[in-house]
Amino acid sequence: MTDKSDKGLPGKGTRVVEIIELPNKLRAKVGGAAGKPGQIDPAAIDRASRHVARMAEAHQAQTRIDLTTLQAAFEQAKRDTEHRVQHLRKVYKISDGIMTLGRTFGYNLLSDFANSMNHFLVDLENPTDALLTVVGLHIDAMHVVVRDDIKGDGGELGQALTKSLALARAKLIHKR
Image (cartoon, helix red, strand yellow):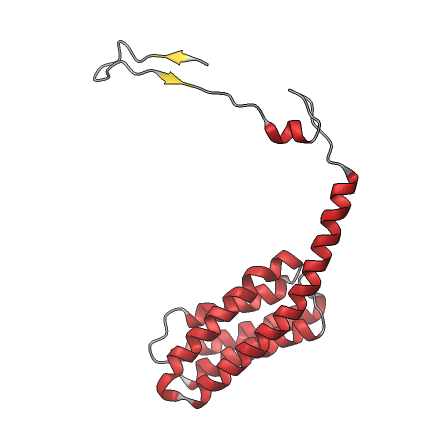
């Protein structure tokens, strides 16, 4: 604990600052001592790795379900022009969930496509047919990523998909 005061500084009263140093409970938990790192039990790391692998399998199944729901909401948006904005808000919400977990399990491209699509869906007042076309292309690209289990940046296929979506976005922005 350390005391410091501001006596003698213009415009300042006496102020005391107390610094409290707490013990590092995490370091102690993994066997470390002051100034010495600990080591995590290899069995705990193995258990955690198996758990993450199980979660990844569940994530793949949930993403397929989410994409089916997203596709249905998108199809409704195309058909129901009167309530199109509400349907596209649902598309946005589902896509946001896909985007959030994609990177966690190595589906960076999936997250990138969902994020890119959501940028078009943020401030919708009067969605055009051109916007729906671009949103549909993003959804199709997300289906490809999941169907082909494309992880990371997707290599050459990922680059081709990314370029085609960038071109579609550029054309839409140019039309606006």
